[in-house]
Length: 98
Image (tube, rainbow, N blue to C red; front, side):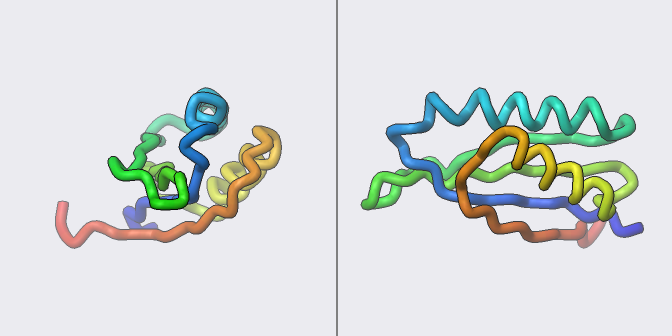
């Protein structure tokens, strides 16, 4: 399996930052509990806010065995459970060297 990393990004109204950050953090903790050891997660945001008042957030998922369909399904399930209303875009990247 490829050592791929999943990046999921979306826009959050800056005025709702404090409301959503604990929701996303809890969601990522739940995902980590349900995935065998080796899953690393992080939550990032761009330093700038758009002219429309949105922050861009990025969830990062990396597993020592790569990201498989079961992991993708779990992330999708936990997003629904958490109630995140944001349109999400996902991309995979693989390392060029280790």
